[in-house]
Image (cartoon, rainbow, N blue to C red; front, side):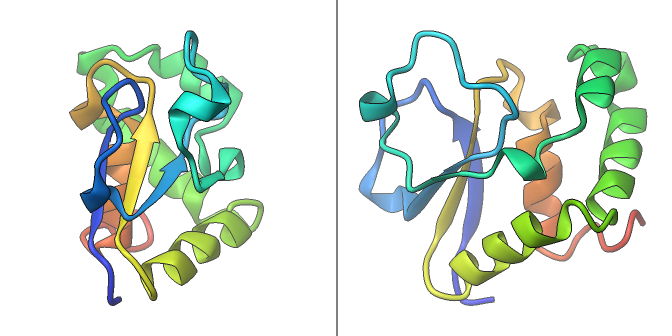
Length: 124
């Protein structure tokens, strides 16, 4: 991997250090215009399933289980093209994963960044 992976809220101003800006939420964030988002890509297929997102409901007490379940979902073949796209982007540039979630450190963006950094391989 050549690029650096980071994550943050989409509501923060874009920075030249962002590299490629990729939204990883399944739903478009409220109050953000497509122009203001300054996205390079929206990879909604890498987001957690609707059922998992609803179950988690950003409850900090459920984060460990959310993380385990989401990593398991990322191993599903339906997620492979989106995960591979992120690997391709990282091969050439820095990438910032964007989410609307308030608690960004307990979000799918944080879990996904860990996975892409090699910290979370195959649900471990």
